[in-house]
Length: 312
Length: 312
Image (tube, rainbow over all chains, first blue to last red; front, side, top):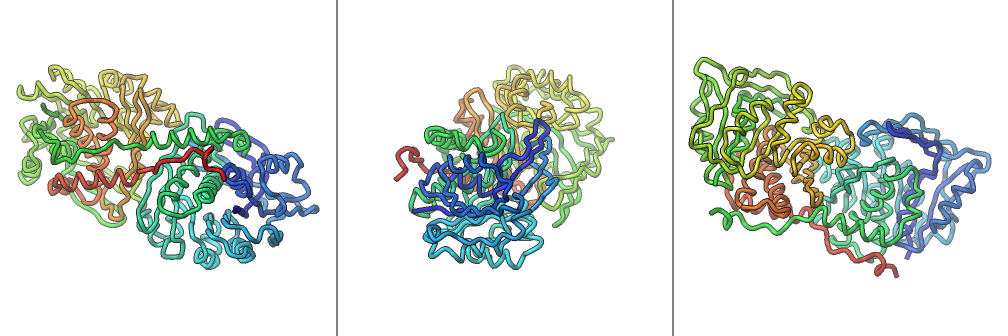
């Protein structure tokens, strides 16, 4: 059993009102695979970097146990670069610079050893590239995808085609409203599920996440942290924890999905406590288990007595 | 046992992108008392209206079972008027007009029958008026208070004095950040609790609420609704449901507070489904009990297996 993730591998420069980081290891595939690796021995990365990608960052991914056979190196090109700035409340950010570089001409060609992957995670990329990857995998059991406002606005038809092939779609609340052209999140969720994905997860940053399935709606809290340093990558680590737990549970029943959202939230909560994905390397399974337990305590509603029996 | 609530009784005009309402019954005391009345037989209102306040609106409150002995009528004055406009996503609003009218010279003088009130709810008002009310009550068991950005900015010292006399403070997330001058909500909560209130509840609208006590943090979801018509009064109905449940449980232990936050969220979820407080009059105890059960299902995290035991 294995997890394949395609996405960006990047240099991130990050400014917050409280500090900054310059050209740290970033990208959706980096965060996703390093998070998933805590749950699954066989995590495969598909992406591209330039000749400027340092050995140190390659070692970070390799030390995290990620299979890098599918990480192409364009020796003459430069690695994807993103520069973002977070606002005072750390919930909103502006993109100051994006340099696609080697990503502009990326045509993924999967190694033969990747073709039997069971869970496929399509990180935020041009929807056509997401399908290029998916089409090469033999017979995946479960397909997850992310996207961003840029593809919603500029390649809506291609995005719809990708969505029709996806089991679980994971986006944030602003993207959900924009994609569905509907301000009410519950109605937006229904409209998006009609586009294909049986399962929809809407990430709300510091407000947690909502899981929509045929069976129910699940509202997961976010972990209350007093030391948020850098929210970059939290959504990708979320996807990694979710995919990792689904791999482990071996089933896609409603309870596994709920637990998966919690493990995703756990991984995201660790990521925001430090710049870059380093924190994901230091984590132990005990750390993860303990924080998941804290989520249960955080959200626990005591047994309710029916109101009819309460009034004196 | 009894609940006393002081706050505004108002005409509200409400514009949303999807409809509007003109001069409906509003005000913090109206929503709070009508919500609390479902949990408590003896709910007392302190407030002031003008000679223009119609019999119809007085009957709405009386039919809801609210004790109106403490509702002063200034025959020569006009009732407090608020005009607000909600944005497309219904989460943010602008105040278009506020006419204090009779509220500008309000000096609450409690009826003798109110002096033995057990739970006192200080709705959003000038902090000095909140204390005027509190000082008249003999020996309240539990004091809750709300406020708004206007008092945080214009009467900070008076607000601090009120806060030092309050057991439970209920505000929204933007107000918490402003009052504490701290963008991180967890740190803001700690700073606000240092100002006096042992219990702090931060309301986050469509994102639920956070309960901070010595013991723990509790994250309550918001009910996912596809028919939000008018968010006005939701925060006050929340306070009413919370006060009502605390009255019923007869104790202030952590579990009662958690359940209180859920019953508050239940009452808020009903209010937003219609303009004005009318929906609160039609509710049955079965409606309330069933929605409270739905909250438990919405937030239920299945038992987690320790990660150490999961890996194949």
